Length: 407
Image 1 (tube, helix red, strand yellow):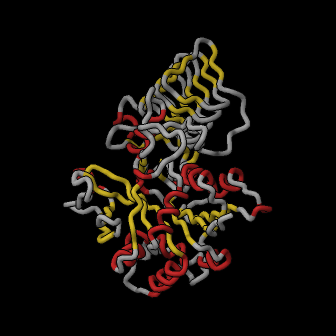
Image 2 (cartoon, rainbow, N blue to C red):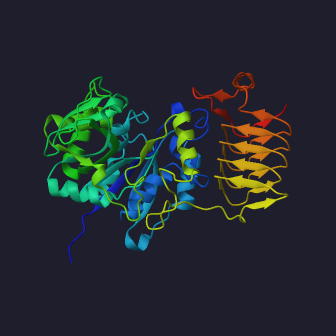
Image 3 (tube, helix red, strand yellow):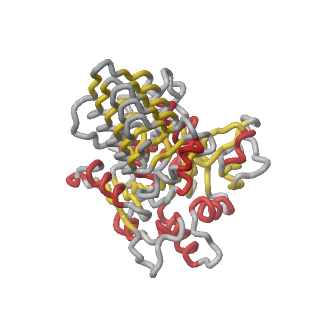
C-alpha cells in the first residue's frame, strides 16, 4: 500500500470583508450566511474534507465569535484517526501585534506546522464559492517537483484586469505574478484568456517555512501571501500554476464544473444567491457525491398555509409562508412571511419576519429583522438610505440585524 503524504491544510479566515459591510459589521466574512443554511467557510471546508484532507487549522482574527461557534458545532473529525479541525486565533506568539497580513498569520502560527511536521501545506482562502478536488491539485504539485503551486482559473482576457494574474510558460512555470495588470498576458494555448489566481496554494513544507521566516524579517514586506510570498517563488522559478479546468469533481454539471466566484461585494454576493434559485443555476447545491456540508438547524420542514406560495426559491427549514409570496428568493431557517406579504429577489437571514402586506424587493435582511405590516423595502433607494440602510451600486438594499422596520 502506498504511503499517503502527511498534509496540513490551513484556511485563512481572518478577513474583515469591508466590501461586504454591513453584513460583516458583526461577523467575519467567512461566517456570512449563504444559500439559506450555509456559511461561506463551508465551501472550502467541504472541498478539503471531500478531498480527503482531515487535518485542518482555521486561522481567525476579525470578530470571530460566530465563526468559531459555527466551526465548533459543525466541523468535528475523528480524533481516533488523527483527524482534527481547530480554530486558531491570533496569539501574539512572535510579538505584541495582531496578524499583519496573510503570510504573517501563518508565520505567527508556525507551531502548527512544527507540531504536525507535514510533507505539504495546503493554504486556502475561506470565502469563495466553488467545488474542487484538492487532492488532484496536490498530485499535480508532487508530480511537478515545484516548491509552490498556485491554482489558476481561466478568465476572459478582457476581464482579467480585475484579478491577480498568473503569467506562466508552456510547462506551467510561473514567470510573473501580476496584480490587476492593465494589459493581462494571454495563455499559451488560448490568447484570449488569462489565468486569475484563486488564492489557493500548495507548498512543500521545508522551503515554505524558510520563506515565511525570511519574509518575517523583512521591514519592507506587506507579509501577504499573494503579494510577497508567491512572488518570491516566482522570482526563483519555483512556482507552477494548476489549471482549475483540469480539476474533475464527481457529478459536476457542465456549468458548475469550473464555477468559482468571489462574493466580496454586496452586488456579487446577491447575484450569486440569485443564481442558486434559477431553474438552471450555474452553481448547483444538489450534488450528492460532492456535498456542501454544514450544521443543519433542528427545525421542522418549511410550511405553506393560507395559499402561501414560493416560486424559484430556496425556503429553509422552520419557515412559515402564511398567505404570502416568495419569488426568486433565498429564505434562511425560521423566517415568517405573513399574509399578502411578498419577498422578491431577496435574501432573508435566520429569523426574519415579514409583516402582513409588506414588500421586500432586491434586498438582503440580516438576522432577526422584523418588517412591520405595510412596509416597503427595496422599492425606493432614497427612502431606504434615509432609514440608514446601505444601498449598493446596483440597488440592493441591506438591512442590519435585529432591526425593526416601521412605516
